[in-house]
Structure formats: C-alpha cells, structure tokens
Amino acid sequence: MKLLRILLLSTFVFCQAEDATLTIYKDGTALIKQPVGWSIPSGLSYITWNSLPDGIDKETPFLNISGADILSQRFNSNIFTGTDFFSDLKGKPIQVKPKNSKLIKGVLLEISSGFITLKHSSGIITFNRNELEYLGSKYDEVELPTFEPFLSWDLKSKSAKNIEGELVYKSKNFSWETVYRLIMKNEEKGELIAEAVISNTSDMDFRSSKIELVEGNLNKIRSKRNPQERAGRSFSSLQLDATKLMNSDELGDYHIYSLNGAHDLGAKENITVRMYGPLDVGYTKKYVFENTERRQKEEPLEVQLTMENTESNGLGISLPAGKVEMYSSKPGTGLKYIGADNMGQVPKGQFTTLTSGRAFDVLGNRKVLNYDRQRKSEEAVIEIRVTNGRSEEVDVLLIEHINGDWVIKDESLNYQKKDASTIQFPLSLNAGETRSIYYTYRKEWK
Image (tube, rainbow, N blue to C red; front, side):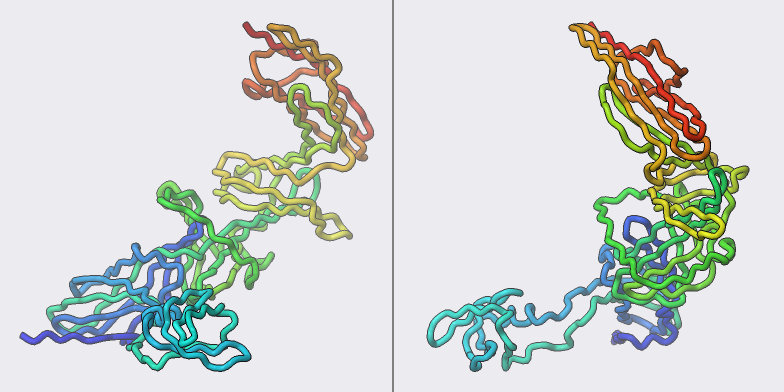
C-alpha cells in the first residue's frame, strides 16, 4: 500500500492564526492556546506550524486535536545563520574583503562572531570581523534554509477530513503588573484605581486574542523574571467602568483576571487595562518613628496610610500585588504626586499599610539619656521627642525594637506589646504641639 505524504507549510485551509488565548503570569511567562485547523487526506500526512514567539519553551508544546492520531512531534530550531554556514566550510576556500583593501582568498581555518582565520599563500592570517566589508564563498550548499523555528507532526487518519483543535505551549517574554493610583481627597478618604500593565516583549504579534492574568507565585524549576518594556500604548481611561473590562475568578490557589472581549497585543508592546475603580475608599493616616535600643537620631517621621480591604471600606475584593502611586487632590490645585510604595497581595478582610514618604513638619528626636551595662544586666533610659509643626492634629506611632529578655518600667505613656521584640506608643499631637515620651528598658541574663 502506497502511503501519501504531503507538506503543508503555511497554506492552512481554515487555520486560525489569530484568536489565541494568552494566560499571562507575573514570572514573565505565558500559557498560549492557539486554535488550529487543517484539511488532511486519508492515511499519513505531515503538517507544520511556524507562528511561534522567540521565547517559546521547546519542551512544552503539545497539539490537542480530534479526528486524527498524532504519531510524532518535532521542534526544529535549526535557524540559518551566516556564521553556522561558514563554519561548515572549514578547510575550503573562501574570500574576504577587508575595508580599504583588496580581495583576499584563502582556506578557512576558523570563524567566530569576532574573528576569521585563513590559510593564505603568505601564511596564516587572522581578521577582526569588524574590519571586513564582506566574506563570500563559491559553494552553494544551502537547501531550503530555515529562517524561523517550526513545529511539525506526523498524523494518521482513516479518512480525508477537516480537523480542528488547539496548539498549547508556554513562552517567556510575557508579563503583567498592577499599578494602583490612590488619589487622596483628604486625611481620611480617597479614590483608588487599579490598572493592569500587560507586556509582550516577544517578536510576535497576537491579534484578536483573549487575555487572562494570573496573580500568585507558581513553583518553577528555574525562574528568571524578564525586564518589562515600559513604552507602549494605553487604552485605559479614568471614566471607564471596570466591570466592563475585566472579570475576577479563582484559579485553584491563585486568582485569575479575564479581560472581556478580544484584544491586540503587538510585539514589543504594552497595553494598560482598568481592573478596578474608581473606588471610594477610606484609610487611616499616621506618622511613624521607628527605632532600636541604643540608637540616637533626629529625622522627619514616615507618613503611613493603612487601608482595610473590606466592603464597608469600599473594597472587599482581591487586590493583586503591585505598585501604588499616591496623589493629593485639593480644589484649585489639581493632582500633586506625593510618593509611591509597593503593595503585596491583599486578600479580602485583610489590610495593607503604605508609606508615601517623610513629613516635613513632623519631626522626631530620640536620645539615650542613660545607659548602664553590668556583667549580667543592661539598663537604658530613653527619651523620644516629637514635634508637630502642622496646622492640624496628627496621629503618631512610636515603634521601639528591643531584643532579648526585657522589661519596661517608668514609662510616661502606656505602651502596647506588639511581639517579643517590639513595643509601640500611640499618641496624638495637636497643631504646633511638642511632646516627650520617656521609658526605661532593663535586660538581665545568667
């Protein structure tokens, strides 16, 4: 029985080169599901697919089709390069043309990306490739060169038919991150906007694609985060309704965000899509002065915002990790940038604390007034002075870290024990007020 073997290069009958589904992870990879379809004859057939991005993991592709048996799959990445071609000509005559010099003929002994060595009638000559105008050969040994990687399959079918399915593989050069914008209307209320910045740094365009974003850390054998290109286009808008652009769901132990509709994601391109917002949220603002044992310093206090992820606070949604850009908004002045911080994943019911910077008008000064160390004990008297130079009342949190087995005594303000090595003094200061807090810690050991 004579077997029919056909080659289908790029002339697919109803292959869908577009309409892929991209599931993008934060580790710089994506799972790509590409719809495919071919018309195959009865018996054996050979088909190929060459629409692949440059970051494809060659161990991951598999073809999921019905109507035919897959006998074998091959991944061919033997791409034609001039260096490889001339490497095969070692021991054969070639010719090179140095800049501002005559053509030189000789036998090729060595070639690399930097140098070429020839056996010439005058001896052995090595050339720097940057100094050559060209190199050439009379040998024409290239037959059907491959210019891009491709997948191929041997299929077997009992009858001629159209088959459909999808090609599934993983690839590098895809990533996404969350960018939040917190617009502070006053000291207690603001507006939160969440956007997803999706990056395709591969060499392949994806048209009319379904895009899914996964939040969570997946275990990998080897993981290398790819740099993201910030230049790109954005089709987000502050007036867009988030529910029309993206849906959120659980994916096992992870969260997946699905963009509604089909989107184009071109090579070397970013797109920005609204996830949430604008949402009216509340937060508590405090000024933090954090120190350890015998440290003495004077500096502005950190400005921290604590925001609860609850429905009563305008949230109650799964917040993916990302960068939070903070702005102040006042009538007549518009938006003013006041700092940024990174935020980890915030599940429903939890809270996050953001630091926008240091306050110009709220200063802290910490001194060790007395320090006494004996052979089996240590004792120190601490003074912390805080000055509120603002025209309004502020909430302050003093954080003190003390290691070892300690006790606090003679404190001028009640403290809170946060953990085995941390105590806190919460207090409020009126406009223009300066206040000093004293305490003594003592440590003993055997």
